[in-house]
Image 1: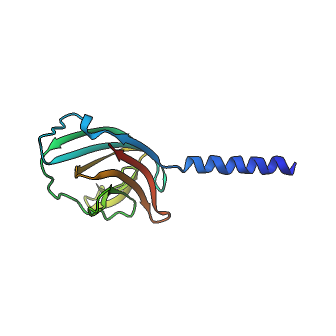
Image 2: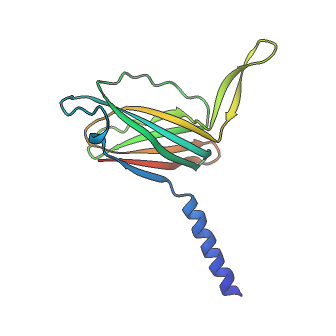
Image 3: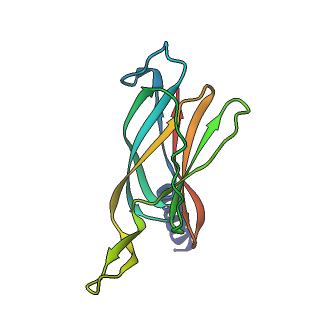
Length: 164
């Protein structure tokens, strides 16, 4: 009986660890639409579908990707809500890895008006959402890692996109 209980406990722990594994996929940038080998500067547009619950329980899928020619303007918006998605590009060279912070599409703060005409912030939760990331396509870019950031669990890796 003890042997059966031990086997069941090991199987349960294995299933729980399998559920916590972050997703990953590979993207061949040179095969994307609008990729021009003659252009010195490229912008990469990535669309991710995110569903589940924030805090490391999300499932992430790459929904679409495209490339454009040109340089990127710094249009980063500050994120004040504590539940966030952090994206960190990783390079094979010694390029600086600047993290990008986005509102979490499943748990965010929105402005709503009440019947008295005052504006207030409310938390909005969803089961599914999309995240669009715009970033320069620098030489040496190996992968992009996505992290779910919550006050309860801290930063948890939820997805890795490798580049060819």
